[in-house]
Length: 81
Image 1 (cartoon, rainbow, N blue to C red):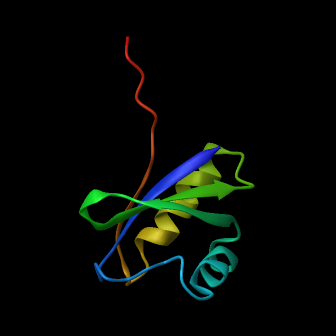
Image 2 (tube, rainbow, N blue to C red):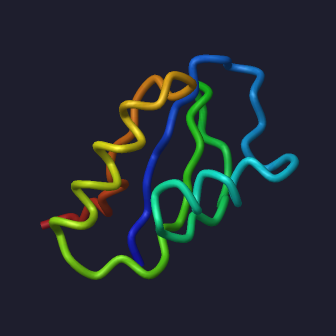
């Protein structure tokens, strides 16, 4: 499962409200599922039906260009070595 961290320009924006996620999912041609908020005003999303790394890079690029989004990055799981 791929997860994304997205921070919105409006810190009071709640992406889980209304049909925002449905519209955003349709625009990027992938399924975004809201998971939880993070400290600092960012939010974590699960990204469904994405298989290729190039497809993930394209989705991140598309999201980064949206005016309401400050930044987006892949949520990478840190492992102790």
